[in-house]
Amino acid sequence: MDDIDRATFKSELRRAGEDLSPARANLLLAREIAYPDLRPSDYVIQLDDLSVAGHAALAGYPTPETRGLALAEFLFHSVGFRGDSHDYTNPRNSYLNDVLEQRAGLPISLSVIFLEVARRLGIAAAGVGMPGHFIVSVQSADGPLYLDPFHGGMTITRADCERLVSQATGYPGSFDSRWLAPSTPRDIVARMSNNLRNFYVQAEDWPHAIAVVERLRTLQPHVNSHWRDLGLLHYRAGAYHIASEFLDQYLAREPDAHDAQSVRQNRDRLLDHLTRLN
Image (cartoon, rainbow, N blue to C red; front, side, top):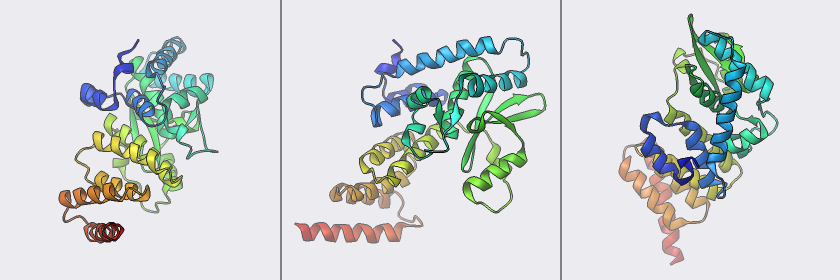
């Protein structure tokens, strides 16, 4: 049994440090948020099996570029992983246990599977967190080669990247080259978690949204906005005392925040409401 079954999201962050595996972190998140009976090691084994099969599929491809392309062909054509454009905001598309079972997911969850298998196979690959659309890059002799796991692992150019950002976000400005910088493992986990938070908020599923933001607070203890968000989510869930406490903590941490005045007014209205209830 992999020791991941005895780990928690918090203990995995502490143990792994900067070598955090987004796949392992996501599986632990899945167990703590949505699947209490989940055994993460079952899905680590699936990733191991994909790597073994991928190793055979990559035989005869000698360069990093050709190995990266062959891995994309293997995962997104032979195995059949695909982007789910029909039920995009379903939280299942963000949990790797579901993505591995259904062979469908978001750009970032499909990218994480590619990165995890690539790491096992010794392929130098990175996640690229463009606004609105996540892709991967593979090192080649001519620089980074960009692949789009959501669209079948196809090779994409900088112009394609610009189009994808525009389509996803509606951003009308010029493309910023910094958007092609590699994402750190913690940034990847944070982005996956933020997706989940947004999907649960859209569904007005406050308990699950709160649980996700609590893990984000563990992942990013210096991001003070998580305290504000927890206050607002607890308010939505009807937990007014807890909501007030989190808003107080946010204001203590960020007294000069751009939204401090509006948060303070909301906190004061909440306190007034609690006083009248008593």
